[in-house]
Length: 317
Image 1 (cartoon, rainbow, N blue to C red):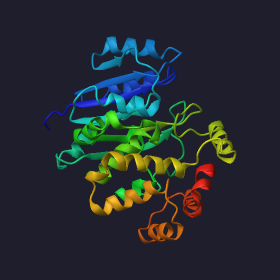
Image 2: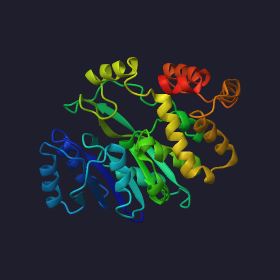
Image 3: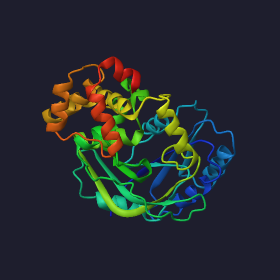
């Protein structure tokens, strides 16, 4: 196999507890041609000291110095402009990668059409704070890799992804015009790009130990689950369908002209939900094109959203 250059992007924040285990798992990869680019988002613990020690030990680890607080989405996406590579990976600070993760995913991608943006995501096992595998939970609720599917749903978890330079270049090209606050998550944006303009593919191997603990930014169990539920009940935060429509609107503004006519129609439908109230037409369109959210409770929310006047949509969602 011809050596492919790999860039791994990591954003850290107060990650001292698990960060060394993840860095060790990267160093242990059987594919050596990688560089790790790290943005620390203002940690107040020993995270920066750990990163400094590892970067001295392994020159492939590069820590971006003196950068401001960016938030998780902007931090990850901004790292993509730092260095050209054949493939890009996102890495969380608290997971553990199988030693053959890079080699297996690169091998699967070798026959992909090089002019198209592509994203691959692998399987994973959930582990607890002690690294013990948790009982199986159904995270991959669906395998719809179409653009239509990603307009309303996301089964791509950042730490399981690899995407090619063509997908990365599309992010970098639009960076100056991008409203990052409108994006739900960085991995979802790449999935929209790949599904709309190229392809999303799966690697049917569990290559990541996806750690679940009380301080997860995304996917946490336990006390944060109840806090998020309370926020939703009190409408402290916008509910998910509003955020998804904002993301789709942003995607269409940036990339809509490059889509096929059929995908343009689907994407514009979602973007228009923020400022057009045509309930009968919108309900009919969603039914005709089988636009659904795969979690039942979320789909009920979506159906309700279609009927509500714009003022109520903005107030409730």
